[in-house]
Image 1 (cartoon, rainbow, N blue to C red):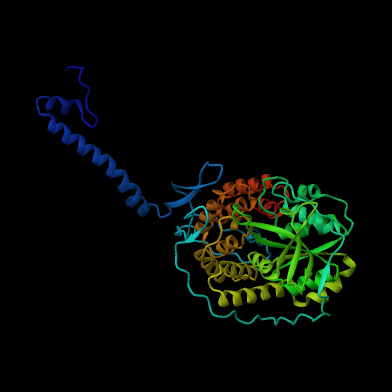
Image 2 (tube, rainbow, N blue to C red):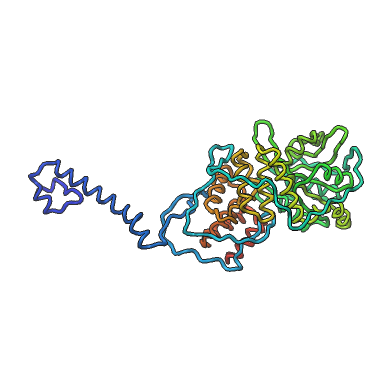
Length: 465
């Protein structure tokens, strides 16, 4: 046989000798037939035969090796993930909520409801059901807030030291400003060393700031939702320090979250004045807003407010705040306020996101998901999820793990400097029983912020170091 002609694939020597005198079209036909058989048989084996023989064979998402944790599809076989023991219950969200452990069907692949349509917004892929027109009455009636003596028409809180923020440092800078009123001698570098050890960290939560005050100073602090302008005026006039969290859109830079320290108001001019660590300068540290604009910006963060006070004045503060002093009652109030605002201004995405956040805080997760869906349909800025995480908790608690993965990875495409994203990836993997991946993500969150307590608790829960 002439060895100058290679034997074609899928043919034996005998076949080749038999067909030596045949034409090339016959050989081509054999080649096409062999290729088709080689292509179709594995497909039939993977998608038809194996699922029948091995019921546990299915598709699931697996983490890629990308540093941004973009999820890739991977075909794997595995035994069902073990059921989490009672000690492995879901930890509370950043806003503590009643402990509810969802029932997870590890064999199901949930269709994602979120897509990153553009770099400026997330859009929902599934229609949102209609929310009930009113929030059912709370099982515990919310007592009325005491009516204190009215504050003066105008007031300025003297004695707050201004700090112009360093890079991405509005949280630490404003906390340092608030503490300076009480003769605290530190700087924003001191607060930042605990709040954000990584200078690139995009967000400091109100809870982190409250924890710093309560752990490392002789002062006390609380944070609440659904604040009002009247509350701010009374607090300032009675020498309590108030820091608010607001939406903020510098010209040409897009929407950000931003902290501001309130130092004055004027009811005649209908204004609120703040120390602004970003826009302010030592020669002119203040920014004065019309009350309506201040409130509009504040609304996008559910009107969160932090109060710093001296321990001996706690009873005075509690008497003024009334039902807002009781955390659970404040959450119920926030839910009612957001429901009313969503009903009166249904095209406002922040009213709906506030409703989702408030419902999450009282453990009403399915309704919270519906509210968040409506907010996403209306359009939220892509940086929104750098700062607010209630949607991840609501999706986890309603077993929508694929949706968590999609939204987390969409957020990580815009920045990798939000440790909470790795924490929620870890939560998904932990629920699925993939403790190795869960440990990797919790450790990644702690590498970015070693003081991130929820990740520490989670890592300990699954037996990590």
